[in-house]
Image 1 (spheres, rainbow, N blue to C red):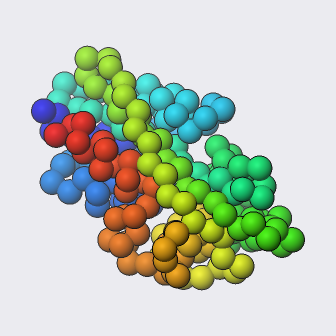
Image 2: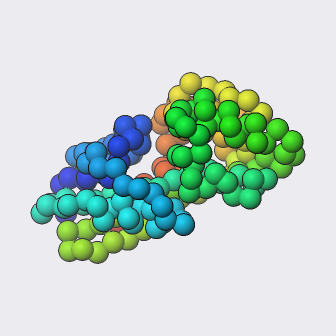
Length: 185
């Protein structure tokens, strides 16, 4: 069993969230930036995990995740992190809300694909999805990205209004990470 998990990310928020979900394991970011130019979340996750140079006793993990909004034809999708510049929650959510100002259908999904690389060269991909809707304005101060506007189905709060433990329990990344934990246990 690997004793260390190397995460392909430069995003401290993602690294912290992954570390919280994988308690009891040593989780380290590799700080390598990889251009996400795949057509799917899975393709980007695989590309990033392949960039990790694993040592014995290590497992590589990389995710690509994003928001898919129905009335925008699935956008921002795989371009979620590059939807606004700079990609701050205020800029990302602001642009999204402006584009959706005339949308009646506010349904959306958060998607997370996680690629897992093993020392033997094998790669597996797991996926987590959470459905919800887009709020009409930003609410809350926790989380990152689109969390201030995403309300998961069955809830009244946005991800940004939830405690991190509650968000992790129901989020797209939380769902994918639970599948990852089953594989690496």
